[in-house]
Length: 122
Image 1 (tube, one colour):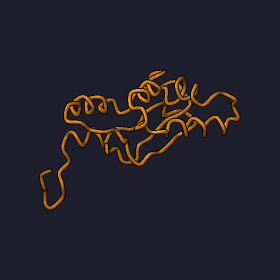
Image 2 (cartoon, rainbow, N blue to C red):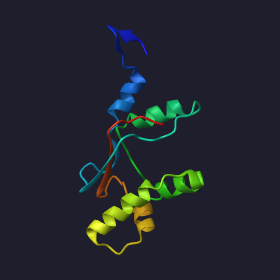
Image 3 (cartoon, rainbow, N blue to C red):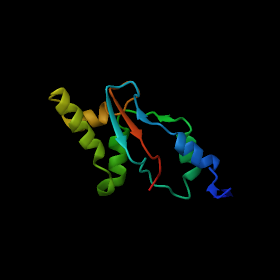
C-alpha cells in the first residue's frame, strides 16, 4: 500500500471491498450486523471475488447456503443456522430452521439482511 503524507492510500480493490454493503434485503425487517465478510481469499479466486463485491449487495439464491455448507463440511460456519433460529423465535414460527435457512434466509426478496461493518476477508 502506497503512503500519501504518512497515511495509507486506498487501492481500487480495497475500495470495492469497503463499499460492499452485504447480502439479502436491505428493506427487510431483520438486520444482522457482522464484523467482517469472513470470506476466505485465495490467490486463484481473488479477482472473481472482487468482481462479485462490486455489486455492493450480493444476491443469495435459495439453496446457496445449503450447498456451500455441504461443500465445506465441518469447516462451515454455523452463523446462518443461528440467524435462522433467531428470526423464527422472534416470529414464533414453527418452521424448521434448516428449511428457513435454505429457502428464505438472506434472499433479495426476503425479510433478512446481513450488513458487514468491516468487509474484510479472513
